[in-house]
Length: 152
Image 1 (cartoon, one colour):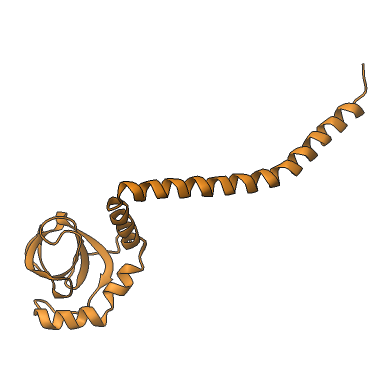
Image 2 (cartoon, rainbow, N blue to C red):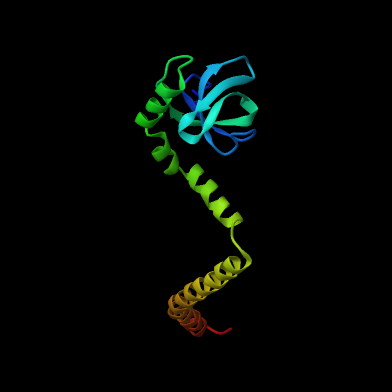
């Protein structure tokens, strides 16, 4: 099967637009072909209608029945440990890394630049130490093959 993430009751999604932007939401009910009723009291998202184009489906699901209330949803969300699993994904780490980068001050960006230069110098030095013996051996090998060739 090509698709593994389906719009279904209990599917966890990342809201990409609207008042819940950047937060995880759980699909509680499907309204029509373009909208779903979402909720997540654990992250402070009120029950609301959200367009499918304003959310990105994740791999996580919460075992809830159709139209469940906020209190049982909170318990099921905690039991499924969605927050912990989400924070371990590369997707969440990328979002956190971008947020950290966006909040850097000018001095923080300067410190990152200096650290990058130091790391680059260490790597270059180590590479050149390894390259010199190999380069010298290749030159000797080429010089030896030129002497062995007969003159015409």
